[in-house]
Image 1 (cartoon, rainbow, N blue to C red):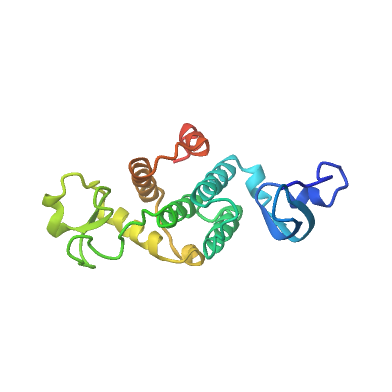
Image 2: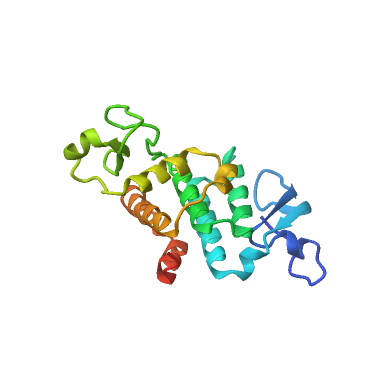
Length: 214
């Protein structure tokens, strides 16, 4: 899409086309070729994401995931709420690692590899001690630990947090209080899940890894 005049100092289109912003956008299109942005409205920008390196890195990675999960012009549907609210929470610096973990977990179904988190993927048990199996694609209860040698050997609390973050709505995230150590365990597990399940190789994720934010 073309945005004519956006680089001019006094252009109203300048702020509307900044990274990490959203609003109502009217475009001119004839169904072929390049569309033109005409009238942006109600544009909101997330200023904190520009000034904080870690928040900027997380937001860039999250939007990179979205870019790879959907094809161009595809309706993102309810996922828009997940993206917008995640950026809002990051901008408010509301437990950034928890936001990132929830986002990664809830993006997996969009990629077509959604994990089974509600119950044991082998027997359907919903209560008790659980671990996670990448090979099976979900949680397994302690009754089957000996049958799955490739399970991740996560702590019960880490698996419990994964189940919670994977199943709640993003707007409920502020109600969760969790230690940094537990979030690191979950994020490291998600790294393994993404590496072994999806072949993405995103530069935004490489940057996060190089900075050792967690």
